[in-house]
Image (tube, rainbow, N blue to C red; front, top):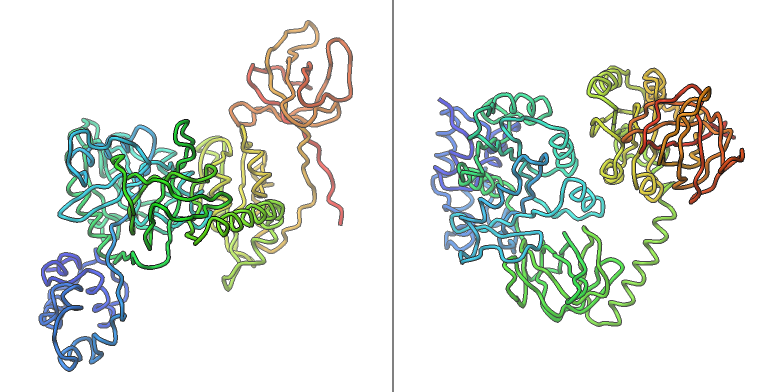
Length: 586
């Protein structure tokens, strides 16, 4: 008969983490709190730990002599093992993520209705991007603002706010594109993951199918011998909520989360906004230390004196400690999510530091292109072998699978390959943010960046490689892995034009009435036709006109008529991306 580690820990009355350490001392290295041990090992642990205090708090306050403590754990005294000053435990900080419409908000609402820290009429009266729940006398902080893109953007700035991610998946729909994105962002952050199988009340609910899908992505259920907790819930009926909270507290116990309210402040912005009446407002979460009303703070490139603070119920508070959220008022400007909050002594010191941060930010933006070049990514790898991180996007699921399988079959050269995210659809701002946080390049097959993504790519200096032929893509990545990373040709984007109207011209075909949104359109340029970020055609410019006149180029902000070579299936809303290919000079 076997028993799980966390069940044995509860029986003996010691933290799961302590039991894991004892197992390691017995030579059992590959163990987690959800692993199982046989009855013989369990009896040995019961014997070893039968004289142990029931909790770490009891251990710190007991009056046992040092000689008694030396009888435990291979003769090493507990006085020597224990830090001189162990910081108090802090509540876990949990971010809920998942696909749209899979019930993230409903799940949070179900938790709030029954487990808000202060049970009162009205519950959460003011949304500040975080809320506090209480279960079995322990608080849990839920961050409900950031989607997976904002989550990773915070991590890119070094803001390790979240301890645990709850990945919400609808049991009747299974894994969806945003589920995969959220999972990859959570994995990249290296945080613990719990899967909430939501909508279990639906007739089509199939939890086994979801577990199979996620198991193939590395989330092996504990019932299959893995390390991932799966909790069936019905947020709309309030079923399984307590099981989920139990799982969160179990992992928090293993992580042994601690925060010293007297330590130097470590706090981060998770959300910010501009209020017409109260000015710039920022929601912060404290990891260590304490933030007070009246403190002078620096938040990135802005600063201020905290004039007021509000908790997640909208109540005015005077201070906030480890793990707890608060909305602060008194900053000069609206800060970005993920920005650290730094306490200083005077207004003058705050101004000086924030101005210095502004100068540093400008310098960082200027250096970003070099910083994220492929050569830099590979040359600065701290591993014994350099690793090439890739974000892979394709136009269809079939194409994505084919490209991914082809890349995974490549022989390893001087560089290892790591596909940190693969998805269907246009290259998005979220992909760029993930690439920045993970020091990755973006590889697209039959897709292009859309909207403001091109500007963000330029600002962040992310390398983006796009292909129409799978063999070219595979060959280039293969050369990268062999250390042959210098491209033979360089693509230069000249500009983009949006199709506003289409005209059918006899003996000519379709002509597009366009507006040049950026750059310029040149008569001799090559053209990609983009529809929702997907490449539908590549062509050349057959005609370029301003009114009735033929012209060589049309600049940004002007309208023009464009005819393409051998392509007439042009739709309103299409984007013409005009580019040239240049040989790279040595």
